[in-house]
Picture 1 (cartoon, rainbow, N blue to C red):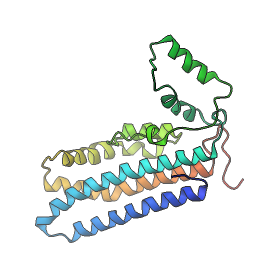
Picture 2 (picture 1 turned 180 degrees about the horizontal axis):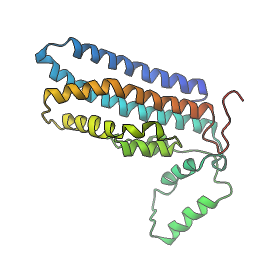
Picture 3 (picture 1 turned 120 degrees about the vertical axis):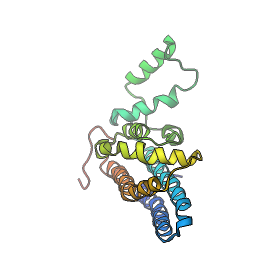
Length: 221
């Protein structure tokens, strides 16, 4: 996939969220309309699916943003430091050891290079949700992309202690009582989509306002 304009970036983000929203709504309807003997199974399924959309859309948005930046191809010198930093993993992944002087010299020379080149990383390796998108992993992705964690600072307990804890229990085949399932599912329905939408909006704004540059240009200027 290539992202060659802001419009393509926005179209991809809209398209990906649209089908996920549809499944949010469909499962909500199914749970609400289910009979008692069906409800627990549907709640378990819905919680697992809602988590999957959390991990899936965050990863998709981040990778689409990287693809857009690869097309724009700004020089690392003009970008905020986090983008040069995320390039380190790919550049030094083979035969690299921080304990070796040669590796230490290589990374030092790369960081002080007056012209490290244009932005180019592999979005599939740079953005890693670790198949378990807990708050610390999400926080890492925010830092990689130069995005503020402030809008999500009060969501750590919800992400880790509510959504992830229950999703992992379900994924590992553990029995969860019905009241806990209903309470958690209700909170996921209320909290999760706004978090996802906030992250997507931040990606849009970062691209359109050129926040990836050391001197961002405000939209419309």
